[in-house]
Length: 194
Image 1 (cartoon, helix red, strand yellow):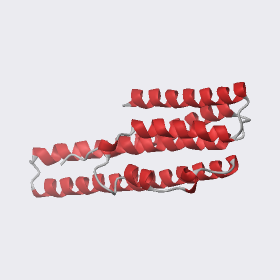
Image 2 (spheres, rainbow, N blue to C red):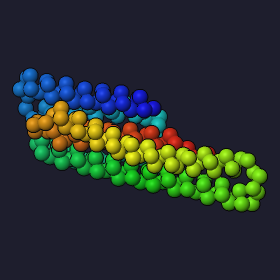
Image 3 (cartoon, rainbow, N blue to C red):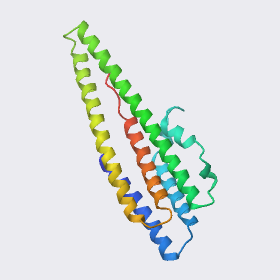
């Protein structure tokens, strides 16, 4: 999973660099940056398949169902950058909610396991389940901290590749949004043991 995430980041960074180089080479207008961003978003949407959506409360479904004012096309790169930042904030809020739900579920199973062990101290199933759920929660905390560090580094790399461009903040926000959505997908795949 980690290799896939890193590969995906490299592909996103490469696409952004290609778009910027094309803009410089052909002296395109700032609105062409929006076209590149839309192509990058299309690729990212394809990476997260529709089969992953189980219900309408799924954070990815919620994100892709929401209509942002720039989806119909922005007039300026400034408006586009603001809208992309709005998408990032929305994706971040979904990630936070999803993490809170995941931690609540793990806490619930840990509590159930402890109660079952108190009733029957020799119940191997609940002893093992408690170990697994506790370690899983600890690993999720650690991986989230590492992910946040990687997100910062990824954003810095993207910013370096577009530094000076009129749409740089939007490009960085779009890359971060993609990164956040992929993290949500990773967290969805974590299941409690019970």
